[in-house]
Length: 146
Image (cartoon, rainbow, N blue to C red; front, side, top):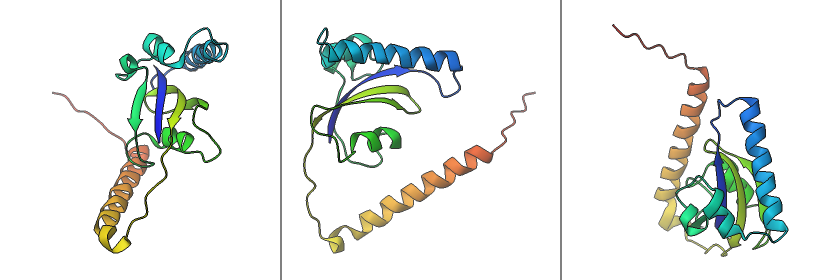
């Protein structure tokens, strides 16, 4: 999948007012794009708070897992979407995204025997990430300074 995005940062711990203001800003940006007042790349250059902004928000090709936040990838890989479709608003740890699909390539068949070690490592990585995420939710961290 290849996509571009406009990112407006708001921390996960941000206030409800910050979240609503960010969502409203992205809705306005989306309306500007849909009305033709600005192109998606120009909107990304003007509004995005991501390092990809100078490239018009283009994040290049990426696989379904482990490159982007799960919510971002899930939205971008929705099979009902076509190239050129705009998705939004999508919340990730980085903030709120307005995403545009710019290209889609079909996957290539692989021989499981050749990639089974990679698959095992991929699933172990995913399992570790899930365990750490679950533990973070339950963790109580205290910092004792002298």
